[in-house]
Amino acid sequence: MSQTHWEEFYATHLPPTDFEDNRSLLKEFCDRHNKIKSNVVLVTSGGTTVPLEHNTVRFVDNFSAGTRGSASAEYFLDHGYAVIFMHRLKSLEPFTRHFTGQQFLDMLELHESGPSTTITVDPDSVDVLAPILQKYKNARESQMILYISFTSVVDYMWLLRAACECLATFEQRALLYLAAAVSDFYIPSDKMPTHKMQSGQGAPVISLQLVPKMLAPLASLWVPHAFVVSFKLETDESLLITKSRDSLNKYKHKLVIANILQTRKHRVVFVTPTTSYELHLTREQALAGLEIEEPIVADVVRKHEEFINSATRQ
Amino acid sequence: MSQTHWEEFYATHLPPTDFEDNRSLLKEFCDRHNKIKSNVVLVTSGGTTVPLEHNTVRFVDNFSAGTRGSASAEYFLDHGYAVIFMHRLKSLEPFTRHFTGQQFLDMLELHESGPSTTITVDPDSVDVLAPILQKYKNARESQMILYISFTSVVDYMWLLRAACECLATFEQRALLYLAAAVSDFYIPSDKMPTHKMQSGQGAPVISLQLVPKMLAPLASLWVPHAFVVSFKLETDESLLITKSRDSLNKYKHKLVIANILQTRKHRVVFVTPTTSYELHLTREQALAGLEIEEPIVADVVRKHEEFINSATRQ
Image (cartoon, rainbow over all chains, first blue to last red; front, top):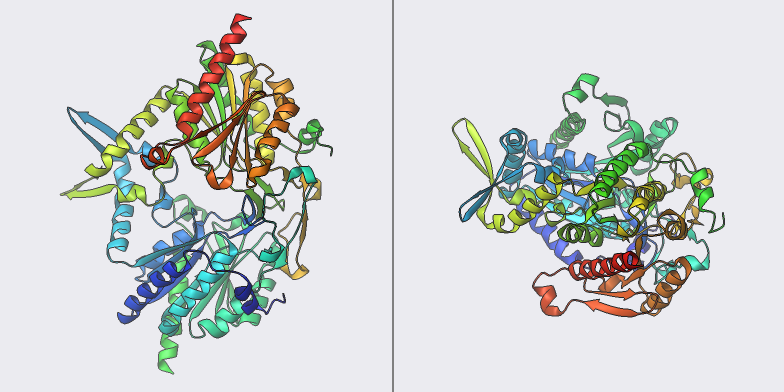
């Protein structure tokens, strides 16, 4: 399959079983927010899997806990955006990301008094938990966030296109913040064994094929008026700017946020068609608990507003 | 590397960076429980990763949420065992597994009254949460459980051997319940690229090698007196019993718990050197919320007790 044949990808890979449910949810969410003229952001987050068998026991995965996407979603809500949070199942989610594993149970106190038992959050934890809980409840009650989840790269591709179909009507007011770590490679459905590979048959060789670059139809056909931001993660600093610039030239979108695996929590590079500049946390900011997603989102929102304004002026 | 050369695996792959810390924790935990003559179980849980690059962006993973291991650990605690819960980082853990994602925040109620804010668990959720919270706090306070985590198959192998070194002194009182989904394949350190594979260079071919079967040195050398239980997950029913029997013949351990991917939540087969029998939940039991790990662990504990008794009588 050549890289440009994205249509063939959809023609030869079935949508996930819950696809129609998710499409309805997306449509309802977008219709409602388009009516009230909200700005909307699609945040994609977490890694995609590439199954190695139809009855999937083994898969190739991309490193991504979903930190960037889940934190950014919170800041977009702060800026008044309606947020479609399209994430890898069980990756980090906005709000809950602050309390992983046992932290949650450790905050709780059991009080047994006679027949009635109550459970409270210990006073020391209330300070941290209360503002997050309040924001979580506000976002849910005002229906400003929609959670959609994927697992495999095929699921992701189907949901991405379905979301774009709904976002197109927002024109310039739609922001796409494509932070998910999507596999570049996959095993086509017809090349995949049915059952678990057997170790008795010797060491297997896995032949991967290139996933078509969906940024091409996305930016030019699906949401041609939207503000599209893609991410680039590298481990080799020397490739970072060149590859980001190549991507902008090829897909004609607005912004690449580039980062290096090892330093991604305190440094990113914003690459636009005409400029590139670094955004980083100082040591003091990092120690004070500031997350780099806060200034990243603030900068993206500012750029998106300029983009909307310049489109309106024309 | 031939399958028997497990020593070469350790000689050519470095231990994880936090290895010595974990070894100290294991030693302290085992020394304490050996002194008071506890029975001890090592529960391994979750899948292992096989990194495809040294600066890991991509990896092969095994399907496993850690349900079997995390549920079983709770039941072993109920039976009075000291539990080493050796699990894949971020897979399910005992107790917290009951409350995933937003469930936790949805249970909480914010009360703001004047300057002081309190947070309580809503009364409807207290019934479910209170007994689990109580057990969690008991296990922690009585130091009956030790949490150790791994990510890659190499981490797992180092920790497994370290745990066995500590468990050997328990002789028959040590139970190994090897429920982790450990990769059969890996990419040796010297065959791995340093940086992220580039999609511009075409579709990659991943050549995997067989991981040495650690059950061999484990059962015969590391903990020769322990009661060792391994698990077998297949997607093809026809291979299940044969492969379990092969494993018992080869490694001379006590029990294989065999299961099929699609039915593993309500049916397993216990395969011993001389018998095999099914253990399953009825539809009524499943609907009533019984977990199959409860009868599995009860049966394993019964077998382990018989094993200890017969060793004592000799």
